[in-house]
Length: 330
Image (cartoon, rainbow, N blue to C red; front, side, top):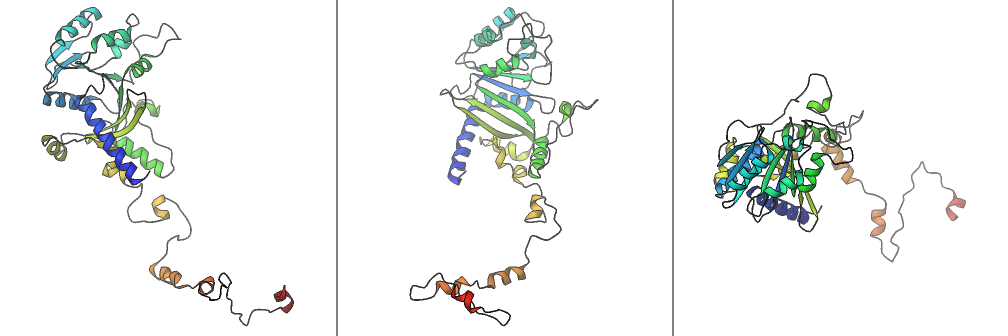
């Protein structure tokens, strides 16, 4: 990609993530966050709530697994074991006043209810003044099996309904996988994907430095935007100072200093940077480089010849050459 195109992509996608996190211009009526044991969605939800408070937007938090209201939440509704019609009335009454950010800490309980029309329920909660932010834990199986094998999986349906999808990843795991790809090795897997008895969560899960976001955004035109971002933790002083000045702290993953580094970028060049093992040195010393530049090839003098004879090769015969007049005439 040309430098101009890279800069255009960077500017456009940074503006897009800023609009989504700040919920400007009704950018995404339904935002779905897919997390796992390797990386929780809590840092992203916390950032949404923080920005909603800065824009003076009311935050309505519907809890299925959170015991107490998180910081910055205005209205906290305990939804566990509450009938859906009752929950629906409470949410509608609380979100009727002004702009409200509606947050579900998990949709797994609702998605496992076979008696509920999931799309109708979610559509009834969304309005131009009430965007929905919902989390789905992909590592948790459904509470009950699907009644029909022909129907879509709830997660597939949620992806279809949402206008923006964020998948969370651990920075430690993303860097390890990129390093393996750079060396043409198999990418490591972590946690449940290792399929080793007793391992539930992998090393490096929920990296405290921040969260990697894989975003898929659907435009009104139907075109999709796919991008990777890094959202730093506010525990780091640099991110806190940028946030206090009103600057965007989310960056493209490609711009992260650790992600830009090559797999082996210290003390080597050429084949060593690529991780190639060889029995000979592919590099050149400074003396070898000077000797190579000093070699005069035969056609150099031919290019300087006058009289339109360019292109002929000048060759001086030596004592070891065997001159054959017949071959020379041919």
